[in-house]
Every structure is written in C-alpha cells, then in structure tokens.
Image 1 (tube, each protein chain N blue to C red):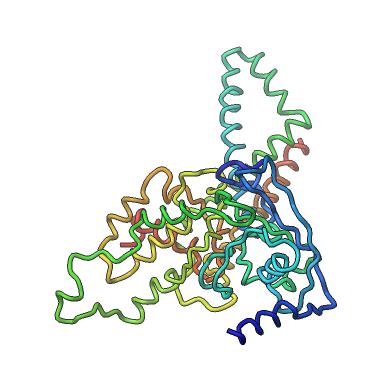
Image 2 (cartoon, rainbow over the protein chains, first blue to last red):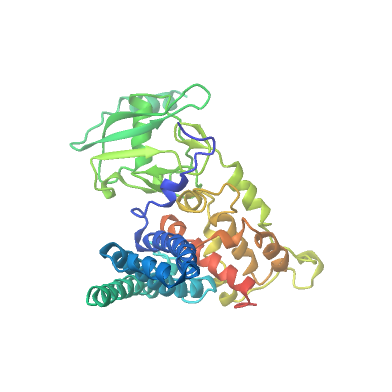
Length: 143
Length: 255
C-alpha cells in the first residue's frame, strides 16, 4: 500500500484544494509550463510543413481554422498569458521582493510571504489569461 | 505512594461526560506485519477545548491501547505530534476538534515521512538535512577569546532571524511541500529556513559555506514558492519567506 518513504507522489503535488490560491497558482504554473513546452514542439512540427510547399502548408493551416483548432489556440493564449504574468510574480518572489520582512510572529501566525500583493498577482494572472482567451476566441470566431 | 495510587484510580474512574461526539478515524498500519493499511473508527466524546491528541489518547485509554502515536509536551513546543488531520498536516495537540467543523476527524501519518507504525513516522531524514546546513554559529573566534565576553546584537539584528529560530522541527512544512511529495533528495523547507536563520544572524560567519551546501540540484532551486510550508507552520516561522530571502543572497539581491 504505502511506499517505503510514504511520499504523497504526483497526486499530492497536483492536489490544489488544501493550501489556498498559492497552491492553485503553483499547479497552473506547472501545467501551463508543460502545455507551452508541448505547444513549442508542435509548433516546430507545424511550421516544418512549409517544406511540403504551399499546398501542404495551406492544408495544415486549415486544421487551425476549425472549431477545435480555435479552442486549442485559445487555450495556448491563456497558458501563455498566465505563465508570463505569474512568472513575473514568482521571479520577484524568488529574489525576495514582496515576500515581507522577518518579524516576531503573532498568533494566529498569518504568513507574511502569502500577502495580498502576491494574491493580487495570482488573481491578476488568472483574470488576464481569461480576458486574453476571450479576446482570442472573439477574433478567431469573428473571422 | 497511597496518594499516587488514589489519584490514578480517580483518573481511571472519571466518567466521560459530554453531549457531543465525533467519529475519529485512525490510520492503522504496521510495515513489519501488514500488507495494507486500514482505518479504524471510534466514537469519541469531546468538549469545546478537546484537542485531537486528547481524542487519540481517549481511544488509547478506553478502546485500543495499541494505537501508535508520538507526543510529549501537549503544548506545541516539542514538535512530536505532527500528523495529517482531515487531510492537512497539523499538530494534534494544537488542533481543537471544535475548530475542524466536521463530525468525522481522520488522522493519518504525515506525508513524505516513512511510517514506523500507525501515526508515528521516522524523522531521520529531517534531522539529517537539518544537520547538513550546519545549524549553529560559525566563527573563527569565541566569546572566551574576546574582551566583550559575548557577541552583542541590536534589536534590529535580532529581528532578522528570531522568527526562524521558533522552528520546533515538527516536520509539518516538509509534509505539505509539493516538491517533497515527489523528490526524495530535496533538502526541504525546514532545513532551508534554518539555513536562512543562521545566514541572517549577524554573529554568524558561515554564510558562504551554507550557501554552497544549498546551491545544488536538489537544494534551494527546487523550491517553487508554493507557500504551503508557511501555511501549515504552527509557530509562524514562514519558511517560504526565509527560502526566498535566502535565494536573494544567491541571486545577488542581498549581500
């Protein structure tokens, strides 16, 4: 049943329900990073179709003109915007910017590093990603 | 002696009177004998002030004395009774049943720690990583060699690290950490926060050696600032802050 080390494993790592919005942002950051990496590889394959000439290139481009293609690209837009905005927040945090100052803690010990500046950063990343996705969908379906 | 036995008899015979009760689900597993784990359920009376540890001890006293649990001080000072309570790492002595807002309280051993039996886990790795970052002041001289006889600090200098000196080595931060969930070699938030505690101490001269220890592939760079460690710390240590400030030294934001 349990592994020797009793590690929580990927299921525990990816469970966003227990530790607030910061853990949700952690999960979304990882998922969007993996998603963008997959898109990067797919994008190289996609653009390599130009070697098949104009006909081959146009055939492949038609894939992105379908409903499924539009939704796929909208998800890519969302991942890209979230990963960028949240990445700036995380990079600043990693340098010790905006994580608060050490001080004698008082009960109930609200952690200073989980402050409103970072929460605003996370919610901003989510909202901006949603807005960018909606704009992208509006442009693609409005063609 | 007669007085002691009288008190003991009185404690044993004290009737449990409470109108409220919860179902306490206790994780049972002995790696030496059992092929799989199971949960045992007990109905335990509680009051507004009853802690989860007291409920477990109630089970041991009246239902099943074989439940394995580690505890000592009962006041969130020794760091012995860390466990998963309703899915989150908490100290059993510091968690009141009435605060959980649930009729079912599930207790399991802390994640990311090998199980000894039932709720008791091994702390060897936590102590090893704690020792690895040199948790003591490093200096070339000593108080005995100086005229001052002691190394004075201003209140501002003390503020830089005193928060991190509150760590009781309970392991809750390591249990909540998403990196610890998958990486057995990760130093962990407890040790990294303690590295900051000594690096930020104005009396310490071992900053470079400590930064060298944590600047490796399974060291500080595996922290992705999820912050779960800080959310579960029962002493307000805020390991996430300490780790980011520590990383600031490595990135050149601090000196």
